[in-house]
Length: 114
Image 1: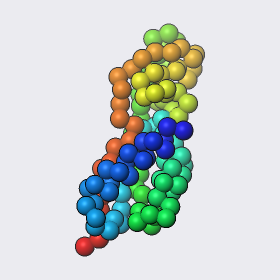
Image 2: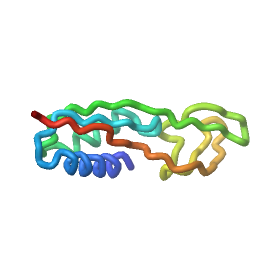
Image 3: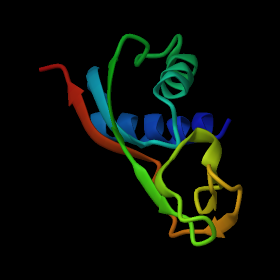
């Protein structure tokens, strides 16, 4: 579950941005290759018992669009269709191809208490 390592890096960056101030909200943008439930589960697991345990996690999804040269599939890559961020498996025919690496998780905002 690569989501855990991505969320661990996100938490580290959020703590740096907060600079010791109490955090109330973390807003992220995640690729369609990461399901929201797995993102939330990783966040809850990694923040349990920390100063970020009660933080609101606000998420928005962006799609990883894909066109298969073999079968003509033109659609969105899901959780099981991307390997290591740059290898796509066509959801229609299973053809493997490389694609430009895209950040799958982006930290958009860290809101701190006044």
